[in-house]
Image 1 (tube, rainbow, N blue to C red):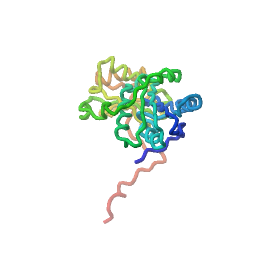
Image 2: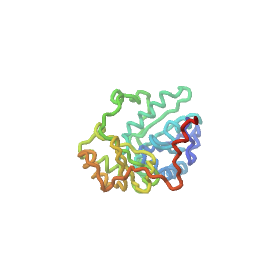
Image 3: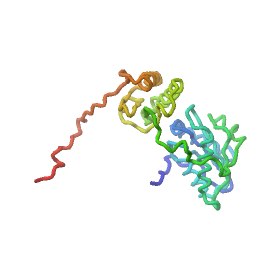
Length: 269
């Protein structure tokens, strides 16, 4: 399935004679801040030497690959990538080079622009001029997307799903994810022990922020930073779910919902 066109139009026209600058959100936090990044891109286009636009390394649209294709197809000959990290839980800048290099190698040489990546990430709009001072071109010999270390399904004991749907995000589930990651590090728990995954909406939105723990099938509500630190200690390490924040998994029918008659699926004699 083709990726959808982003909701907000790109701010870069991809003019072949003007270099393109792509602000690349490195984590889900930057995807949440799309409007702010779009404003920064528009201001950069107006005030600077670049046509600027926004893309995302993960969990946001347009993806970096989609934006690189768009710019290259428009005839852009030079693209500068700036990783943007507004929090503490973003991949290292080397991942931006790795993803960009994979795209560059796959692109036909005849339509392949020069792609440069800044050596540091921008953490605010004030950083942009500073990080643009030092860039390194993609040369195609960067590390590939595959590695022997990523061949096997992880052997983690628990997988924690932190909801990052609209309501949970509005109630600071980014702080929940950050607090969980830091607490697990303090507890000496790595990805082989507890794998943390940020998700879209998990649906019991009235209890936001929502967190679920698998394979235990334990759901938590109102899981702010203090609660998630306790969940990490007592449930993820000691094995005892935290009752005060646990949500019931008892299924109740909505008043307007009518369960199908089980006889309806039986064949008539």
